Amino acid sequence: MSKFKAVVFDWAGTMIDFGSFAPMGVFVKAYETFGITATIDQARGPMGKPKWDHIRDMMDDPDISAQWQAKYGSVPTDADVDSVYEVFVPMNEKVVADYAELVPGAADMIRSLRERGLKIGSTTGYTRSIMEHVLPKAAEQGYEPDNLVCSDDLPEGRPGPLGMYKCFVDLVAYPPAAVIKVDDTVPGIAEGVSAGCLTVGLALSGNYAGKTPAELAALSESEIDALRRHATVKLKNAGADHVIDTVADLPSLIDKLDAA
Image (cartoon, rainbow, N blue to C red; front, side, top):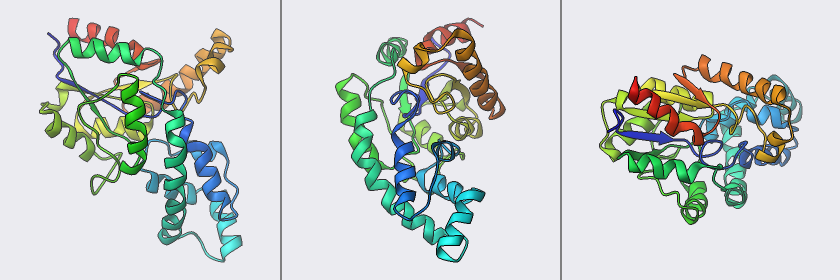
C-alpha cells in the first residue's frame, strides 16, 4: 500500500506532446497576425502558465514590447493581450489534437499507479475548449484521468494552488503531502509547491529539453545529459523535490519513496 493517495499530472510535455510543441508555433502565428515577430524561444519562456498569462509575459518581453510600441504607438496593454488571446485559442484548438500522442510508457505507468490504488488527477495551462479536443485522443490511447482542471475553470491559475485544491476535492485526496504533482514546467511545479504537495519534475519529455523522442535518440549521451542538467536546474529551483526523465520513470520513484 502506497503512502500516497493520488498523482496529479500536467498534460503537454508531461503525459502528451513529448517536447511540448503544440502551443509554440501557434503563439508565433498569433503574433504574426498582429505584425509582430516572435521566436520559438520567446514562446517557450512562460510555458506552463495559463495561456492569457503566457501571452502577457510574451508581451512584456523587451523585444516584443518594442515591436508593439513601434507598430501601434503604445506599450501593449491587457486589452492588447485580450486581442492576441482571442486569436490564439481557436488556432490552438485546431492543432492541439495533432500533438496528443501519449509520452512513451505513459499508459503503462498509469496502469501501474491504478494497481497501487492511486487516483489520477490532472491540471493544465490549456483552456477547457482546447482540452475538449485532447480528451478523446487521450482516451483512445487508454488515458482517462479521474478529473481535469483547466486554466479557465478557476479565478486564478498557476503558479497558485487553486487548481490543486480543486484536485483534492475532486479526488477526495488529502493531506497535500499524500498527493504528488508531476510537471515539466516551473509554473506547474510551483503549483504543486504552493499547495504543499510532493513535486516531481520531468527533464527530458518537456518544455526545457524541447525535443521529440527521435531527436533525443539522435543525440549523444553527453548532449542528452546537458539537456537533462539544464531542465533539472530550472525545475529544482522552482521547488521540485525530485526530477526524473519522463513519467515512465515515476513508478520506480514511488517505490523508493514508499520504501524510505
